[in-house]
Image (cartoon, rainbow, N blue to C red; front, side):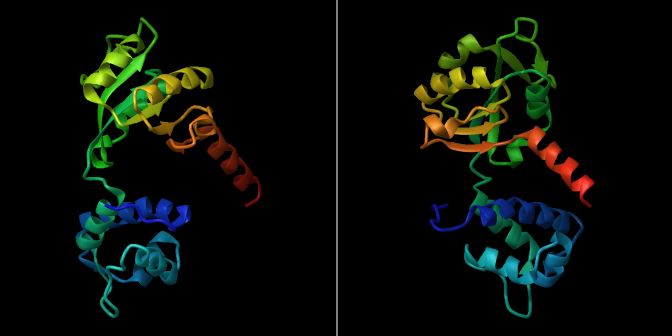
Length: 211
């Protein structure tokens, strides 16, 4: 799918929500839905939904709405979920193991090919009897052989800094970042999606106190 310039991040960040809701509708046996009906389920306006989808070509028919499975397939293509790009996890502590075990990478555009740690007591164990935790000392050889394009960082900030330097040298330019390390400051051409769980929790605390 060619890159589309000029589309705001707010629109891009809504695409996974559309995909998730459409998946639920398809599983429920819904074949067709209007922008108004979809807006009621998602808490958006019908106009906003039409504007978002028009950024990528529209896909609906006036007076008929959207065919659920077709729209879901179109959004899957926009998100490039079919590409199955190789990914690795750095850090096999509680967070890293949870990410490796419970995130469905194969339905989100990636194939999880390896997980690494420095802790001797963890190295050699298996995540859900599938991936074996490898010594981070083997990271360079592994990357040269399997050429992952994305790394999930589930390590402390200082460890992330050193690992990103190594990974960037090895050609990895894309990061799902659970650490607090600001990758883009040093590598502005890197593609980074940062996840700050504590920020989200503090936001919830504020909302609860001001509801």
